[in-house]
Image (cartoon, rainbow, N blue to C red; front, side):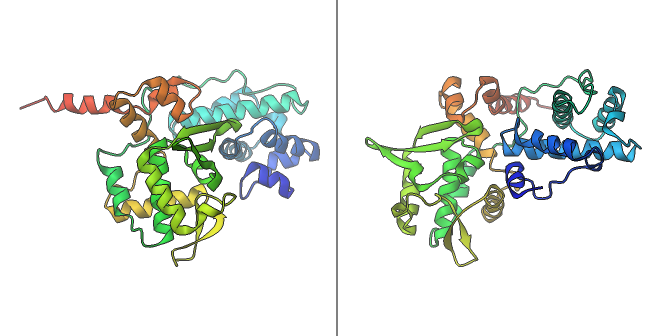
Length: 322
């Protein structure tokens, strides 16, 4: 696989499964094209690759020698097995990946039919997301505990502040450049590059302005518009490089800060999204505005992050007295 292909799929060890290799160079090429042409999101590529790799490995262990040998009953048997091991959303994602791959291979003339086309999965819907939201006061506790005597401390506080005050996805936050924080009239804006190549501009909360201004001035980044807004650290010296922080680094940093603050370790960068949306709606924000801030195409997605119902349920349950 070429370096350009590897960069596109964003998977460290992306290799063609044995059933694909056995089908020959033309099929192998179309297999990699599936991950680089119709799928534009790197996270979706990685997730779909893992799902398809797992399915084709299962087929190989079951004795299938060629892609043409895979029939609808094969796919149905795999899904039946997976349903006993994985949660419904995972099963649904695997089925979507398998169906889409075989549709692509059928369209490209590799296969005569799509064996996954008519295979069904159990119906699944959710009214609330599973991402844990911070409890009242925990976000401020987390921000307050971060020391500001080093550049990395200032960076961490500012980065977590962006997550808290914008509901932004961590991928969009780590991709920010200094020039994406800019004045407009008397206030500042943040410009995010979102999923699907969409761009979003948000006014900056006055508390977040303070965090960002202090951070940028102390580090000298305010004079480097082309630099990453949140660069990686250099060793443990508390200094910053000019290499952008990646999502996994940001997630690891949050885990360290949570431990430092004595907060539960199950929180993730996405927890700020659920917490921010819930907080916004609790303070009389509208669902439509929350949807725009979060960058959701559908308000039903925004509703998944609303945890107000959980709080009402807890209050109701506490009404039980014995």
